[in-house]
Length: 433
Image 1 (cartoon, rainbow, N blue to C red):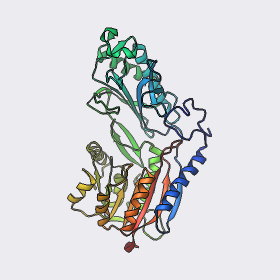
Image 2 (tube, rainbow, N blue to C red; image 1 turned 45 degrees about the horizontal axis):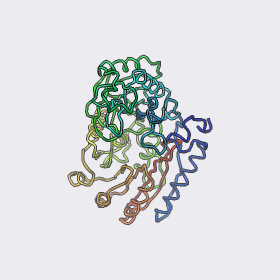
Image 3 (spheres, rainbow, N blue to C red; image 1 turned 90 degrees about the vertical axis):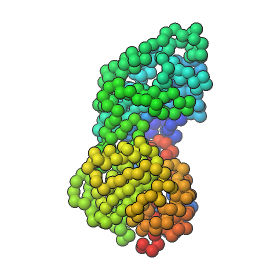
């Protein structure tokens, strides 16, 4: 398929932005955009390695969060994505090209089940109702599937019209909560799926915000996690833990990040580090401590650990840190340490000083005060991974002012058909050359 302009949701859904152009053209657009930003921000000559495309351009997403609602006021129940530029309207999405067909089957079966019962969804105005979201995770490399129905703590109700949700006299039926979720669980388990359902969950979320939060999660079937494999390493993923959305693209991203970390300054980029499937380790970082700041669930740290003396990850989200520790133990990695805390404050409490630093901050980039502490270490090189090139371009200013120069940069497309892109930059200290 040259493009997905034939998608029935093209121009309606708020997800894909490039449905009308080929993937080759998308890469060109993204490449020119990032190169333009970098050229404007980088103060010296550097090697731009261009853009690397995603190994999969369809069915690449390993996670989707769907919302319950309706497409028009008091219309039939919908389950999918918000209509473009709309806070209230939700369009059915059981035909998405970005996910495996297993996702679409699960979404369709879930919508049909609750539509048959006439169960209400949570109203954004009155904050009443039962159905909120459906979270589906499917590991691309293992086929493990995790399905999580997110509801309020209210009893499931059937009313004459959704607008009657505030009028108790219009309630036609009040369902037993356990029976409703049990029936839904059975419907999902009966689906003919290519992957393997590892767990089916029900998360209760009574918060006011229109976001998936966890007040309590009940396991309806199986377990509350799946496994994914990246570069020979195994990762346990829970419903709400962060993990790169594109597993195959993440392998490309992490290989390039590892290559930059192991760059030896001679023009030879090809790392002698062991392939993570098990050959002999490299001595290139064997005596060095690497900081992985904003480490998430520790995937980058674990990819680097076979080549380093020690890798120390710092991440503010405690659940992500706990997942990182579990995954390091799962992979038998003894030289990874993960610390829960804000980078700005936590750096002061780490006794081991870094030899190299990897940065993978959130979209807004790095707090200027934290960036000052980072450059004060004076490490020989820094690898900055960014999911928002504009934030990266801004942060390159103080890094270069502090004595670092950009050696090379690369763009990695993790999100075909969207505007999102990942950028990796290798910076070297002047006196380290």
